Image 1: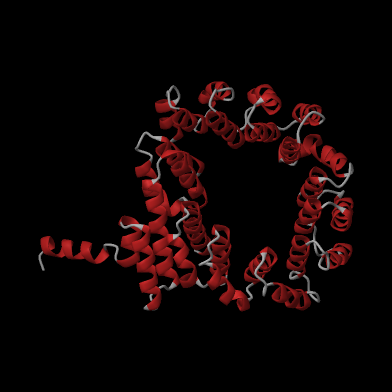
Image 2: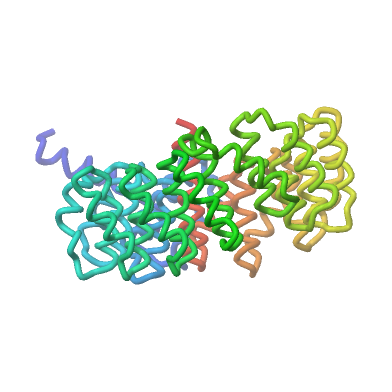
Length: 423
């Protein structure tokens, strides 16, 4: 066969068909119909659902406009590698969505920062100045980066702080400290504080200590994270974390204790004691955080988590039972209790089903299959994630055509990220 005749035939054979084609070019109603048709025909194997997920993600990237579209493109940071080409194409459009696609590529080191900084550092668009700010990681761009720290657009400031986290410079220290104190945007204050931690050194550690008394809880949590960064931890950050951990059982103290454990501190036993006490005596929020982070290799932690598994607070009870699934000798009874809780129709049952799905217990599959048709968007999202964890991609696939754009985009990205990790 002549090449001129063979090439069109090959292109036709490789063209997307069925649900994949509809995800790229059709509407949601048609996509739901195609997914159901393929499911009924037994065609929704894992690889096929991954292909549909990639098509859905590509469609969201290319069609997203305005602030909501930009937010959905931002979701793709967790699965950018298989979407590189479509993100590159979207970044060629000089709107907010194109700027967000460029941000995703920069975060993945898949775009030339030098070129986009030169093109957009003086842009009248805040979204594209933010791209330039995120690209300001080279020494010759850092003076401009410090100007971006105080830009009128919070998107620009956030992007500049992210760049400072990636490539710290001691020359940024004073401006970052002021931003951590004065920036009107909570996320910007948090990023600035972490930027100080990335620079590290005794001056940075003590300056963050000076900010502590007047900081709100969110900023304090950022300061705790900053002290745990390597260059700050070694210059007095560990000492400051110990002080915070010993100050009580509030959220910041528990976060400090957790970070001391992760860093293998010599004070780790005191941290474990604090976390165990919080499990037993803290507020509901403090108990959940402590249960999530406390090491269940410690006998005292296991004891208090077992007590929490009988608590009247349903959220605490389910989280405690989920942690006990990690403990030899406690696993069977915890699983049995979670199966009982999973029979209900309330939020506690939903949490129990999610915990069992994460554990690999297929007994919750029928309930999850029913929940993907729930009128509540949150139920559909949780159910789809549980089914993916159990390997039932076919039953989760309908949520790729969900009416809620954020849910279908986030599920598509989750599927692609899991596939990438499995390679």
